[in-house]
View 1 (cartoon, rainbow, N blue to C red):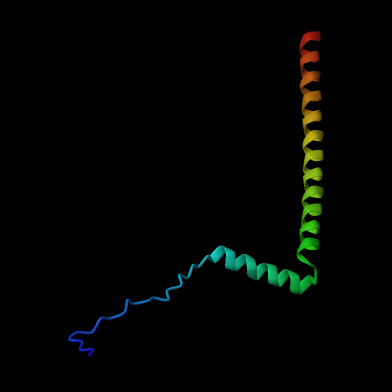
View 2 (cartoon, helix red, strand yellow):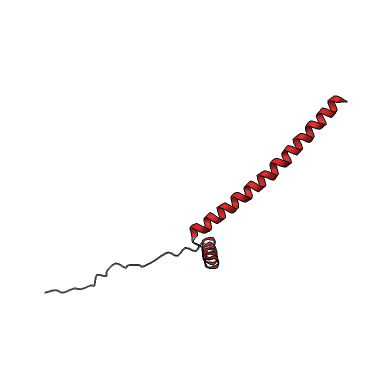
Length: 86
């Protein structure tokens, strides 16, 4: 005979899935989608294109900087020579 005077409850189970919101990541994904849909380029092609553009800009900046630097050094040398000659 199974007489039960009180009921034993089962343990409660929770189905909690944490939700993380990263605004920067979401914005970056939207920009990627827009860029890919606009240009119809794959992600690798887009990266290669950006890398080439950055290298081109870097070379252009360093070229201007070295030219200004050389002109400045020559100007200083001329001033020093002029000072010693007079």
